[in-house]
Length: 69
Image (tube, rainbow, N blue to C red):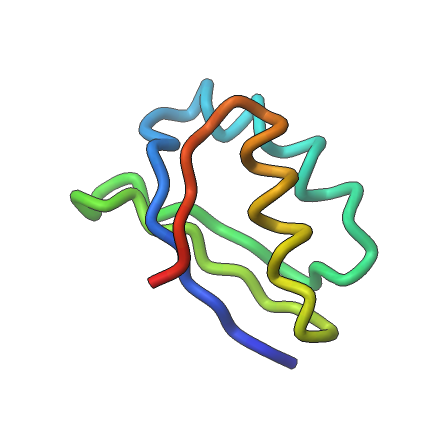
């Protein structure tokens, strides 16, 4: 398992609802969560592999900004 953190602009429960289908459809994602209390709106993801690019692409497709930290 690989644990990766990203800085995002996912800043509310509505945003989480929007991005949920994109992240839940990925085969390599075990779990994910967004810390709305953190100023950088940290997205934490546990991956089965090292393909973090698919996370970045999926979040961008959902209409949000993302960068690995």
